[in-house]
Image (cartoon, rainbow over all chains, first blue to last red; front, side, top):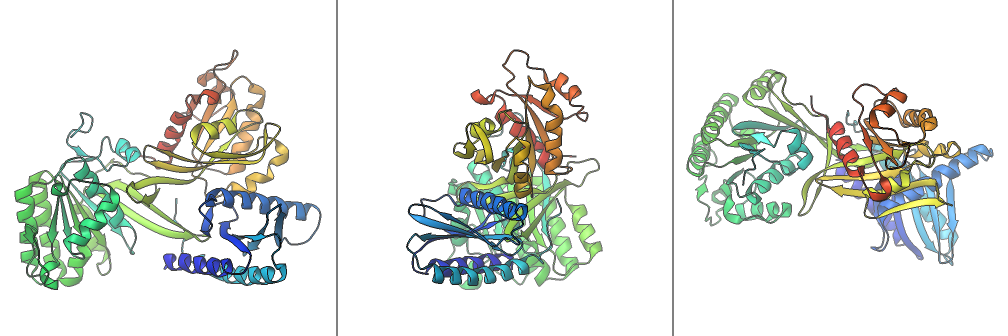
Length: 133
Length: 392
């Protein structure tokens, strides 16, 4: 059953990856560990997960510090591409890389949908009991 | 192929585990690979079988689910082994009307006496050092309980006479608690398996307990599987922390072939990350910043922490309080090792002095290191790994 959740998460990422101008998609946990990804071979998924967690964690705290209300998303805007790190439920961070000239309206809409699907899947999987260590 | 230290023992091939077991499981002994739901215990059994064949030991694999050709193909994912060392007891070919060239074949799968006759004969003739019975729940599902328990004992007796380590895979679907107690009593070691989902990530772990009074008992050991490497112990997070300028990033670099550091002007502002792969252990290593103003980073990464490498500058006792505070930030009851770094510098304090100055609990490991030359760093990680695995 637990494996099924993983497969469905990957399916959500793949669907988002098919949107025009989306280059790469990954899902990290808020503590920087990788959950799933559909990244090109040239990118190290574990490092990207750790980076995204640091970006989101830092952004979240900056938002709180400045009284900006609840955190939704960080965007890293760079020369060749943008990276969106979007909170997906309590646990997840959805990482989406898109080309600079992408249609951001469509991208944001698709990211929003993916976030909703991921949030539901992660909440389901949360009911599986944790290992006692 | 038996080494002196492990004479009369069979290695699991998972190095840290073999060390904890004083060289492996003793011959003869009976292992129960147990879980109450379908998990990855077959991985352990297959890995165990292949490790035996690789070491040149005769290994007997009794498979009720797969044709021998399929079983052999799947076993080769664990590494290249000499084919003649692995003997498969074929319970499938006759049912599927397949040709079989296996020496040991079960013709009538509906007769438990025949099943156990073939197994006993195979054990008697090949005198294997390892036997895997995959699995007992197959028998438990098909035959009356008392008959199964009788044949179970018969197979154990034969394995004992042959000096074999025998593994029974068993998922309990139907048996009552008192039957389970009887089954446990037949075993020398119980290896339990769990898998669970935590925030979208699947984790597998196992625990080994010796049935004998005062025997070995490990903690839950997280593990992972990779093609051709087999089963490795896997720590999802080792935190490297300590005061400012103690050498944390250098420790991460020394441990990991490839690592990254988010730093500015020589000081870490976000984190260091690297992946370690040594002697049957894989670990993700996360280094924290040392300065107080970056403490919020701890809140992000301090979850599911397997263990901590606490790096201190052995020449700066004034930072020791800060070091202890950082340990508290990560959380209570997490195994840690203190790395007394820069131990080559003049004025560096010895391990005992540091332990008393820091007022560390009795028995805390303090390892002198020179991270810039990679000295002592791996030893510290191995000590930490042993602490996490734990043995009573």
